[in-house]
Image (cartoon, one colour):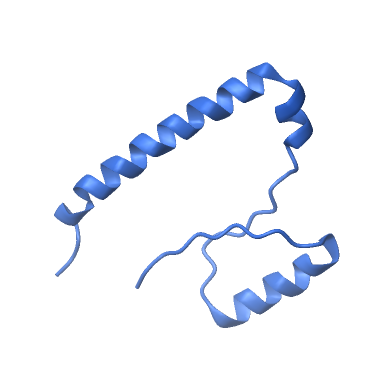
Length: 75
């Protein structure tokens, strides 16, 4: 089985119906509604710095996983 993560934009009134639809058809491991942080990004340098560092960290973790996950796969 594969685990897939997607991010979609929906109108607020569509969220509950979308969540119900997804949960009826697949096993949902996590479902989050992400806050709109655009204004924070535009106005807050500390937040910008944190997000940039998080992106660097996520990239390193992804590279590590891609380079090493084959050692742990079941046959």
